[in-house]
Length: 226
Picture 1 (cartoon, one colour):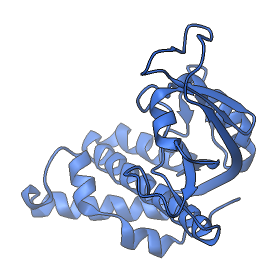
Picture 2 (tube, helix red, strand yellow):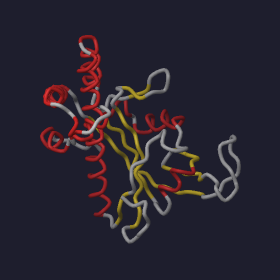
Picture 3 (cartoon, helix red, strand yellow):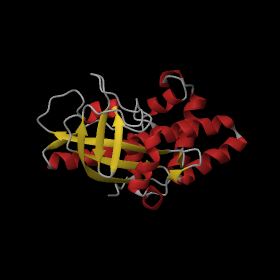
């Protein structure tokens, strides 16, 4: 399913303090010149970026302990879990902990589009400072887009008597980037949102995120719930 993101809602939700954090400072330490530059670049970014997102929900099953599989899994008390998520099989201790108790999960991808990459590149040719500010604005904008997707998933979970777990992306903990190509393939992200992988295995456009979001029973009180 595609999740529409309203531009004005996105503008309102972008946290300036997070933009400054990406720039390596606190908001209160930014002078008037920098504050003006942030607002200018944020406005330019919002006018040019093209947000796309897509998710699918799959049944989930998990084995807490698995025999060694290709050298990736263990059998001791700290064993990795074998997670069967739709057509995917994932071996991960950390993702397994996040999804424990879930019987389904959503895979999603979100991107700010190639227009954002082009804007940052064009600015980098003229002034590195403006490019860095725009990159920080884009990083926060993408976080807000992901929050919007998770908000949609949370409303869907509520209607099913469930609640969502925090999103978990390839590259977090031992949920390695080796699963990124299959996730992109399963979601058909090139067709759905115009996102794919470079020859080096990195997501493109650069401001693109993929993630797993588990659905757990609403009555659970575990500290992993979203």
